[in-house]
Image (cartoon, rainbow, N blue to C red; front, side, top):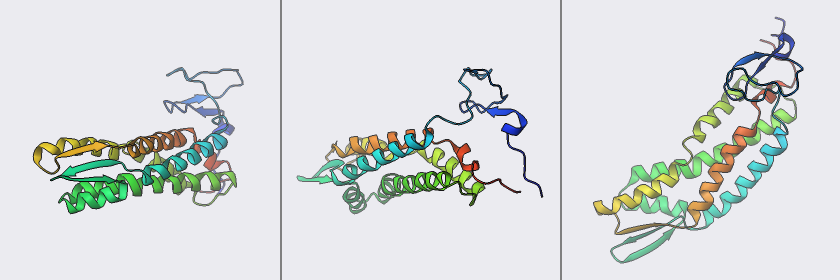
Amino acid sequence: MSRLPRAGELGLIGCHVCQLVCRDSDVPDAACPRCGSPLHRRKSASYSRTWALLIAAFFFYIPANVLPIMRTVSVGDVDDNTILSGVIELWVKGSPDLAIIVFTASIVVPVLKFFALGLLLISSQRGSAWAQRQRGKLYRLVEFIGYWSMLDVFVVALLTALVQFGFFSQVEPLPGVVFFGLTVIITMFASMTFDPRLIWDGRDFDD
């Protein structure tokens, strides 16, 4: 079958903010008629900005795992826990559900986001036509899980509330939380600066 026409060939352009499909024009500073955002065929410097943010997030993720993220005091025992040791601490203290949540939000999700964004960047820059539909779905998945990436920070706050139930006598957030929060925020910006339309800029897609 012949390939499907591209939006540019049909004289169409999509707003990257509200997703409205608009008529393309050569008018400088054209704006979306619905939300007023500037219309452009591709996000400016998408590759360089996304790479810069992704690398910065990775460097922040290292101290987020090395530095202690929380301090727990229980029956006179004081422990400064990193993310991984905190997961073990929660499991030992009888909170396996919270341990699984922290492990998923703090280890699994960030690593998957690094891998997914890196894969999207490399494959798009090479103009690869490999699994374009699946890569588009992968990008939407990265965007979706980005909204839940701060879950680990909220868990630390939740642990403080558990004091009144007798799980711990005291819980304090430590500097690791700050670096983890920065990692989450920067990876969210990285996924926002990546233009998913670049996935389709390789060879023509035949349906």
